[in-house]
Length: 102
Picture 1: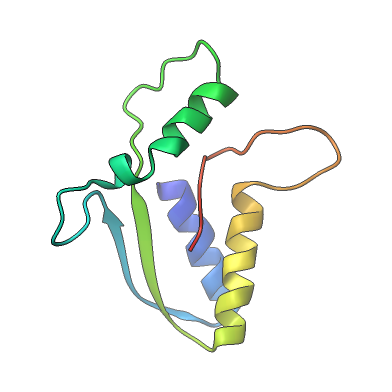
Picture 2 (picture 1 turned 120 degrees about the horizontal axis):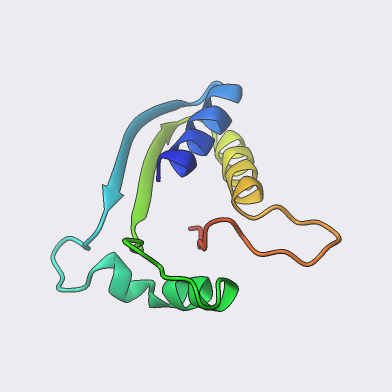
């Protein structure tokens, strides 16, 4: 999570956006579902990409970040973070961190 938070911090800082709040969320407010239950496909993705490896203490969580910036800057930050999470290239690859973005 620290690595992902660092990506967000660098992307926001490079574009002069201000992070006003950042929280790691493990459960949804007002509901009985956890982020792990809602994102169980991410655990499945990790298992497929790392066959035979123990997932250890990994769990699906959300990093929710509130920024002060323009919509255009937000789009640029989002694009930069997603590109770092799973860089595209010509060779087959797997993402360092299974993710989904909203």
